[in-house]
Image (cartoon, rainbow, N blue to C red; front, side):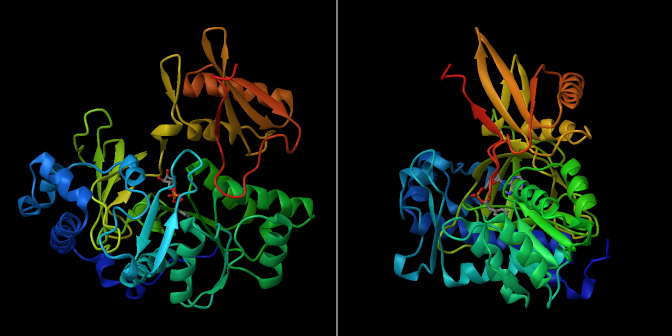
Length: 427
Ligand code: DLL
């Protein structure tokens, strides 16, 4: 793999600023953001008043913990534009979640917000190893989902050649990567595995592909998966994180030179880790729920948003901004099996140790009598499936039935993979 580390002279000055400088900027921006939300969004005014806090109470960064959380339900209850802090005429773009599980959630960006997005996205792509002149194959979905357009803006701004291919039509994905000689790809890790399958189906050696770096996010994936993809394609695999409520892709990203967790672009997004049960802030280094406060967004300021993503905050390495560890999982995807918490990433980690199984998997939950029962669907032969069942038992600590089927028996996604199917109620 090529050394793709950026020169430090290419970085934004703030990327390597001192902690004091970063925190001074954060405080200044946080005071602005809290006041902006309070003065312009009815919901924030009402919730701060109810909590007995006022923007003037924010004297230090730790004072943030005195303010109330924002939840996904607050977005739903204020559908569509109730949390916007500027008139709709000043909103340049709207994104929204698909709303498959309820009311869609809607977010907006002013012209300045989109410019900020370009800045953090450019930083992320550069951290991942891309340079002006590289050709980026952008296979994140375009549309209301933030992945496609979010990556696109920053990529164009930094002078990449962007191929806005979006998700789907896997055969064509491979053809375009090869014909256009893409050096970078942005895509969900699970869809990258489908692209890998397609390379092999077409009789092409993925290690000879032109790709030098893949920038994967929008769903949890493990270091074991990084290894699998890096070995298969002989390219770097870097993690990028974001969520539409806060921005979209580009809230944090790994640096190709260290690949040791995602540097949060802390000059625009203030991270906290809280205890999920008590809601109290936890010190850096402890595992808990990630909470974000936007520091500069105009159209859709968001204060203490509970992401439901579990991770820990770590000190900076390749950059002075703090890192978040690779996401363990979403609390919504946590399975509790006879009292033991299981995340799909733990299954992925074990699966990738077994050589006779493909990297695709899906977990199905059913009831067997009164008991919950976990089935892990994989592709490969039965003896490899038995090895996986043993690894899950000894390393994750739960009994799972592993069903090893033929190729293409596990559902494929062209975006975010559905890792857990809960059939407990239906049987
Ligand atoms: O998935 C934004 C995005 C697009 C990020 C492309 C990265 C690349 P949403 O659809 O709002 O936005 O989903 C956000 O996806 O709360 C996490 O649970 C999950 N997620 C996003 N990135 C990662 C990641 C986009 N790198 C939700 N690792 C978040 C683990 C991730 N989970």
